[in-house]
Image 1 (cartoon, rainbow, N blue to C red):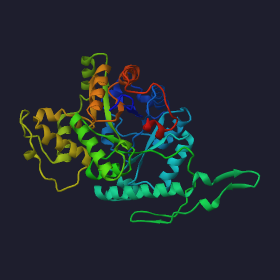
Image 2: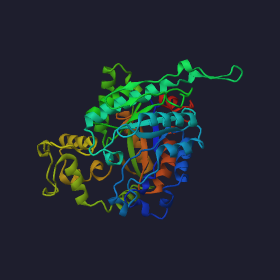
Image 3: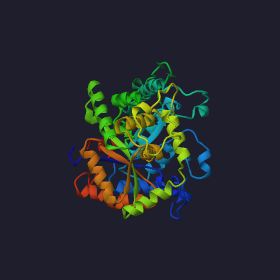
Image 4: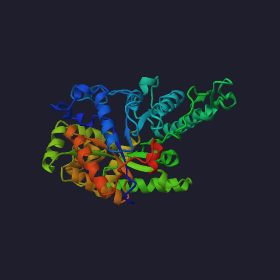
Length: 433
């Protein structure tokens, strides 16, 4: 990979509040539900010339974690990014919308509205769901294969709705008078397995081009879907080998579908616990996760891959033979597959497996160290073909975010891995640089 096309996003979250991080004096947890901390992050990201900020979302809330940390407490991503759109000029704004639960008509209108308000900077993180069906009148969650079938249909409807009210129909001729050429505006009359939508959309398309699509699933169905439609993939790749395998697989799938593999940017989440020294960073990480006990990890592993480690010794070596066949659904097939693949590939000891990011945290690529350690890790991954960039998630303490902007990005720019200035004005243009 050349040193001129690294793509970098920032998770628009106060990631340093997780675990015990929110208890630090300078955590700003009191601002969790205010605009200002997110606006500050977006402005810093824009000043650093990042491609985009990325707002994840969940449509459910587990209350048990709230006794000791913020958990999934959040703000609506569309409303948050709309507020930020008016205060920024270049940074892409990637929002999350579930195809499992949300109406295609509402999603199509919200995205097109954000595209208008931001002048072409909207992006859609198109996700299925792993929980929350009870909040939408459903008793059971669809199996993974059907969720992706529904996602494909949802996307098809959204795109048809965008086409139903084209920008070219807007005439705005005061003399005639003709506001729009109604011959170009048409219902879609869509009838499918999951959706029956008439249209047309009430919001016209913008003159700023297509809205880039992001996708985050790494199961077989998720990869197939991403290879067919995604411009970027938000990937969980805890190690170099996982990143190389995922990127190569997506590129091969894209070629088979007749796509240019360079159209898909693989952007793994990069969890950053940074400090001025490695020792200080290690202490931050340890303090943040001090209350993540063994029983919690045991339970997580057992749910994900069916393996009960409670009766194993720390030094026991795990192999493929230890992995039971699962005849039940799992909460996240992506995380389940990552754990299984790691055991098969690496044959780790029980103790080392219990310390893995996909067991302790969120399966993201993890750097615990100095800003230079982060730079070195980024260059290693990209040079090895394991990523086209990354989505930064500063954790532990707010200093991680500060060091990311103050030292990591400037070092990447200085070494020729990242842009000094924006070349375009829209998110699609940033992703094509």
